[in-house]
Amino acid sequence: MGSALSCADILTVLYFGVLRLEPWEERDICILSKGHAAMSLYSTLAARGVLDREVLTGYYQNDGTLPGHLDRSPERGIEVSAGSLGHGLSMGLGLAHGFKKKGTGRRVFVVMGDGETQEGSVWEAALFAPSLGADNLTAIIDHNNLQGYGRPTEICAFHPVREKWESFGWHAIEVDGHDHAALLSALEADSQGKPKVIIARTTKGKGVSFMEDQLIWHYYMVTEAHRSQAMEELS
Image (cartoon, rainbow, N blue to C red; front, top):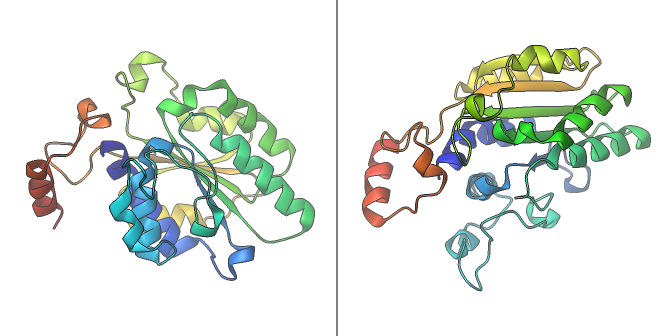
C-alpha cells in the first residue's frame, strides 16, 4: 500500500494529463516497472475508464481478476508483466526504439522505484538509450527513499542521482513527485533530443498519516480499521 500511494500522483498526471490513448492501437505506453505497486496502476486505469471498475473487487485473491504483481494484458492497459525489478526500463527502451524505427510519434514512460535503480540492468538501459537517440523515452523515478529492507541511501547509495543520469547522457529533471503542476511541467518539457529522466521526490504512504515514510507499509496488510482511518484522511 505504501508503494502504491507513493506513485499515485505520478500515475494520475500521466494518465489524465500526458498520455495519448486514442486511437488505442497508437497509444503512448506506460510501464510500471515497480510491479509491487500494481494496485495503484489498476486504480488509475479504472478511474481513466480503461479498466472495468468491477474487476478491482477481485484484486489479489485466489481465482481473482487481478494479481498482486502485474501480469501483461495490453488490451486492459497493463503493458508488461512486472514484479521482478530492474527490467522495465530495458523493455521500455526496446519499445521506444521500435517506435522510432517505424517513424511513429508514440512515446514510452517507465515508472521505477529508487531501490530498483540499484539493479545493473537499469544502468545498461540507461547507458544504451542515448546511443539509440531515444528521445521518445521518459523514465520517472519514484524517489521515496524506502525499499523492502530499509533506505536505499543507506543500503546502496546512489547519490547524486541527477548528476549520474546526466553523465549517462540523459536530460534529468528533479521535482516534487506529489505536485501535479510540477510533474506535468517536467513531463511536457523538451527532452533536448535526449531520453529524459524525472527524479520525483515522493513519500511512501503519502496522504495517510500512519503510513507515511514507514517501512512496514511496504508489506503490511490493510485491515478494515486501517482502511476506515485512511479513507477518512484521504477524503
